[in-house]
Image 1 (cartoon, chains in turn cyan, yellow):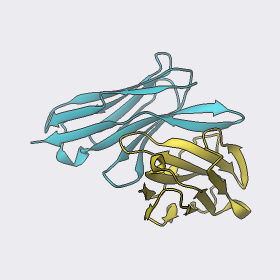
Image 2 (cartoon, chains in turn blue, orange):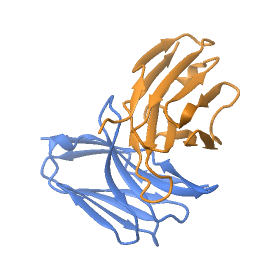
Image 3 (spheres, chains in turn brown, red):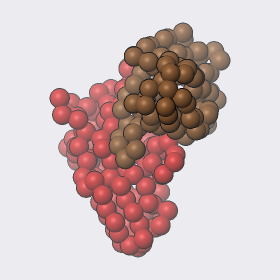
Image 4 (cartoon, one colour):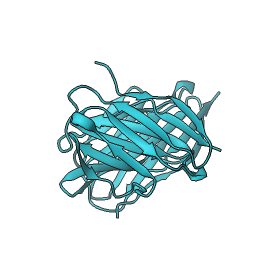
Length: 113
Length: 115
Protein backbone atom coordinates (compact mmCIF):
# COMPACT_ATOMS: atom_id res chain seq x y z
CA UNK A 1 0.00 0.00 0.00
CA UNK A 2 1.28 3.42 -0.96
CA UNK A 3 2.20 5.67 1.95
CA UNK A 4 2.94 9.36 1.58
CA UNK A 5 4.85 11.22 4.26
CA UNK A 6 5.37 14.95 4.46
CA UNK A 7 7.73 16.81 6.69
CA UNK A 8 7.68 18.98 8.50
CA UNK A 9 4.01 18.90 9.51
CA UNK A 10 4.22 22.38 10.96
CA UNK A 11 6.48 25.16 9.79
CA UNK A 12 6.79 28.64 11.19
CA UNK A 13 8.81 30.87 8.91
CA UNK A 14 9.99 34.40 9.03
CA UNK A 15 9.20 36.61 6.08
CA UNK A 16 12.06 36.72 3.60
CA UNK A 17 13.48 33.33 4.53
CA UNK A 18 13.77 30.22 2.40
CA UNK A 19 12.62 26.74 3.28
CA UNK A 20 11.83 23.35 1.77
CA UNK A 21 8.95 20.96 2.38
CA UNK A 22 9.61 17.29 1.69
CA UNK A 23 7.26 14.61 0.40
CA UNK A 24 8.38 10.98 0.49
CA UNK A 25 6.37 8.07 -0.85
CA UNK A 26 6.75 4.35 -0.46
CA UNK A 27 6.10 2.75 -3.87
CA UNK A 28 6.82 3.56 -7.48
CA UNK A 29 4.90 6.41 -9.04
CA UNK A 30 5.76 8.94 -11.69
CA UNK A 31 3.01 11.45 -10.96
CA UNK A 32 2.89 13.81 -8.05
CA UNK A 33 0.72 16.80 -7.28
CA UNK A 34 0.98 19.71 -4.90
CA UNK A 35 -2.11 21.43 -3.53
CA UNK A 36 -2.66 24.44 -1.32
CA UNK A 37 -5.50 24.71 1.19
CA UNK A 38 -6.41 27.90 3.03
CA UNK A 39 -8.36 27.57 6.30
CA UNK A 40 -11.96 26.65 5.65
CA UNK A 41 -11.36 26.47 1.92
CA UNK A 42 -11.00 23.71 -0.63
CA UNK A 43 -7.85 22.49 -2.33
CA UNK A 44 -6.19 24.55 -5.02
CA UNK A 45 -3.88 22.84 -7.49
CA UNK A 46 -0.36 24.27 -7.49
CA UNK A 47 1.81 21.89 -9.49
CA UNK A 48 1.51 18.72 -11.52
CA UNK A 49 4.79 16.77 -11.83
CA UNK A 50 4.63 14.00 -14.40
CA UNK A 51 8.15 12.66 -14.84
CA UNK A 52 11.45 12.10 -13.13
CA UNK A 53 13.39 15.33 -12.86
CA UNK A 54 10.33 17.51 -13.46
CA UNK A 55 10.63 21.00 -12.04
CA UNK A 56 7.85 23.56 -11.96
CA UNK A 57 7.98 27.12 -10.64
CA UNK A 58 5.29 29.65 -9.89
CA UNK A 59 6.22 32.84 -8.11
CA UNK A 60 8.03 32.06 -4.87
CA UNK A 61 7.25 28.33 -5.04
CA UNK A 62 9.23 25.69 -6.90
CA UNK A 63 8.43 21.98 -6.95
CA UNK A 64 10.59 19.10 -8.11
CA UNK A 65 10.26 15.34 -8.45
CA UNK A 66 12.84 12.59 -8.12
CA UNK A 67 11.05 9.32 -8.86
CA UNK A 68 14.13 7.20 -8.17
CA UNK A 69 14.41 8.58 -4.66
CA UNK A 70 10.59 8.68 -4.33
CA UNK A 71 10.89 12.26 -3.20
CA UNK A 72 9.35 15.57 -4.11
CA UNK A 73 10.27 18.94 -2.68
CA UNK A 74 8.41 22.22 -2.49
CA UNK A 75 10.85 25.06 -2.08
CA UNK A 76 9.75 28.43 -0.78
CA UNK A 77 11.87 31.45 -1.65
CA UNK A 78 11.71 34.69 0.33
CA UNK A 79 8.48 33.79 2.09
CA UNK A 80 5.66 36.32 2.38
CA UNK A 81 2.60 36.24 4.63
CA UNK A 82 0.30 35.36 1.72
CA UNK A 83 1.95 31.96 1.49
CA UNK A 84 0.55 30.97 4.90
CA UNK A 85 -1.62 27.90 4.22
CA UNK A 86 -1.52 24.11 4.40
CA UNK A 87 0.34 22.39 1.57
CA UNK A 88 -0.44 18.83 0.53
CA UNK A 89 1.41 16.52 -1.77
CA UNK A 90 -0.52 13.71 -3.43
CA UNK A 91 0.88 10.73 -5.27
CA UNK A 92 -0.92 8.89 -8.04
CA UNK A 93 -1.32 5.17 -7.54
CA UNK A 94 -2.38 3.01 -10.46
CA UNK A 95 -4.83 0.34 -9.35
CA UNK A 96 -7.48 -1.67 -11.11
CA UNK A 97 -6.98 0.21 -14.35
CA UNK A 98 -7.37 3.65 -12.83
CA UNK A 99 -5.25 6.21 -11.06
CA UNK A 100 -6.15 7.42 -7.60
CA UNK A 101 -4.47 9.98 -5.39
CA UNK A 102 -2.97 9.27 -1.98
CA UNK A 103 -2.48 12.44 0.03
CA UNK A 104 0.11 13.27 2.62
CA UNK A 105 -0.95 14.67 5.99
CA UNK A 106 -0.12 18.20 4.93
CA UNK A 107 2.38 20.86 6.03
CA UNK A 108 0.87 23.77 7.88
CA UNK A 109 2.91 26.84 7.02
CA UNK A 110 2.76 30.08 8.97
CA UNK A 111 4.79 33.05 7.73
CA UNK A 112 5.32 35.83 10.23
CA UNK A 113 7.10 39.19 10.15
CA UNK B 1 -15.48 27.53 -16.83
CA UNK B 2 -17.61 26.77 -13.76
CA UNK B 3 -15.93 24.76 -11.03
CA UNK B 4 -17.12 21.81 -9.02
CA UNK B 5 -20.29 22.68 -7.11
CA UNK B 6 -21.30 21.15 -3.80
CA UNK B 7 -24.20 21.60 -1.44
CA UNK B 8 -24.90 22.11 1.32
CA UNK B 9 -21.77 23.88 2.54
CA UNK B 10 -22.48 23.11 6.20
CA UNK B 11 -24.58 20.52 7.96
CA UNK B 12 -25.10 19.74 11.63
CA UNK B 13 -26.93 16.55 12.57
CA UNK B 14 -27.27 14.30 15.57
CA UNK B 15 -25.75 10.85 15.62
CA UNK B 16 -27.91 8.14 14.09
CA UNK B 17 -29.54 10.65 11.75
CA UNK B 18 -29.03 10.51 8.00
CA UNK B 19 -27.56 13.11 5.69
CA UNK B 20 -26.96 13.54 1.97
CA UNK B 21 -24.48 15.64 0.03
CA UNK B 22 -24.71 16.69 -3.59
CA UNK B 23 -21.97 17.32 -6.15
CA UNK B 24 -22.01 18.69 -9.68
CA UNK B 25 -18.65 18.20 -11.42
CA UNK B 26 -17.05 20.33 -14.09
CA UNK B 27 -18.84 19.86 -17.38
CA UNK B 28 -17.33 17.09 -19.46
CA UNK B 29 -15.36 15.52 -16.61
CA UNK B 30 -15.90 11.80 -16.73
CA UNK B 31 -14.33 10.96 -13.39
CA UNK B 32 -15.80 12.02 -10.05
CA UNK B 33 -14.38 11.48 -6.58
CA UNK B 34 -15.64 11.81 -3.04
CA UNK B 35 -13.09 12.41 -0.32
CA UNK B 36 -13.35 12.63 3.44
CA UNK B 37 -11.05 15.12 5.15
CA UNK B 38 -10.88 14.88 8.92
CA UNK B 39 -9.56 17.97 10.68
CA UNK B 40 -5.77 18.10 10.52
CA UNK B 41 -5.45 15.31 7.96
CA UNK B 42 -5.13 14.96 4.22
CA UNK B 43 -8.14 13.99 2.11
CA UNK B 44 -8.94 10.27 1.97
CA UNK B 45 -10.63 8.84 -1.12
CA UNK B 46 -14.01 7.27 -0.36
CA UNK B 47 -15.28 6.45 -3.82
CA UNK B 48 -14.34 7.05 -7.44
CA UNK B 49 -16.75 7.00 -10.39
CA UNK B 50 -15.88 6.69 -14.04
CA UNK B 51 -18.97 8.06 -15.81
CA UNK B 52 -21.72 6.43 -13.74
CA UNK B 53 -19.81 3.30 -12.78
CA UNK B 54 -17.89 2.75 -9.55
CA UNK B 55 -14.20 1.98 -10.11
CA UNK B 56 -12.96 2.20 -6.52
CA UNK B 57 -14.93 2.11 -3.30
CA UNK B 58 -12.43 0.19 -1.23
CA UNK B 59 -12.39 2.78 1.58
CA UNK B 60 -16.10 3.49 1.68
CA UNK B 61 -17.75 2.24 4.91
CA UNK B 62 -20.49 0.46 3.02
CA UNK B 63 -22.55 -0.36 6.10
CA UNK B 64 -23.43 3.30 6.45
CA UNK B 65 -22.19 5.20 3.38
CA UNK B 66 -23.61 5.02 -0.10
CA UNK B 67 -23.05 7.01 -3.26
CA UNK B 68 -24.49 7.17 -6.70
CA UNK B 69 -23.85 9.04 -9.87
CA UNK B 70 -26.87 9.07 -12.10
CA UNK B 71 -26.47 9.69 -15.83
CA UNK B 72 -22.74 10.15 -15.33
CA UNK B 73 -23.04 13.74 -14.13
CA UNK B 74 -24.26 14.73 -10.65
CA UNK B 75 -23.52 12.60 -7.64
CA UNK B 76 -24.89 12.18 -4.14
CA UNK B 77 -23.16 10.77 -1.08
CA UNK B 78 -25.33 9.56 1.79
CA UNK B 79 -24.57 8.61 5.35
CA UNK B 80 -27.12 6.58 7.28
CA UNK B 81 -26.88 6.41 10.24
CA UNK B 82 -24.21 8.97 11.07
CA UNK B 83 -21.65 8.46 13.82
CA UNK B 84 -19.63 11.02 15.73
CA UNK B 85 -16.47 9.99 13.84
CA UNK B 86 -18.11 10.99 10.54
CA UNK B 87 -17.57 14.65 11.45
CA UNK B 88 -15.36 15.89 8.64
CA UNK B 89 -15.31 17.90 5.43
CA UNK B 90 -16.58 15.95 2.44
CA UNK B 91 -14.89 17.04 -0.76
CA UNK B 92 -16.02 16.28 -4.25
CA UNK B 93 -13.52 16.43 -7.11
CA UNK B 94 -13.59 15.74 -10.80
CA UNK B 95 -11.06 15.13 -13.54
CA UNK B 96 -11.19 15.03 -17.28
CA UNK B 97 -9.44 11.69 -17.57
CA UNK B 98 -8.40 9.06 -15.06
CA UNK B 99 -5.18 8.34 -16.94
CA UNK B 100 -3.24 11.11 -18.61
CA UNK B 101 -2.45 14.23 -16.67
CA UNK B 102 -5.12 13.27 -14.19
CA UNK B 103 -5.38 16.65 -12.54
CA UNK B 104 -8.25 16.77 -10.08
CA UNK B 105 -10.32 19.87 -9.38
CA UNK B 106 -11.95 20.16 -6.00
CA UNK B 107 -15.23 21.67 -4.91
CA UNK B 108 -15.65 23.87 -1.81
CA UNK B 109 -16.63 20.92 0.38
CA UNK B 110 -19.42 20.20 2.85
CA UNK B 111 -18.50 20.52 6.50
CA UNK B 112 -20.43 17.91 8.51
CA UNK B 113 -20.70 18.07 12.27
CA UNK B 114 -22.27 15.09 14.03
CA UNK B 115 -23.31 15.76 17.64
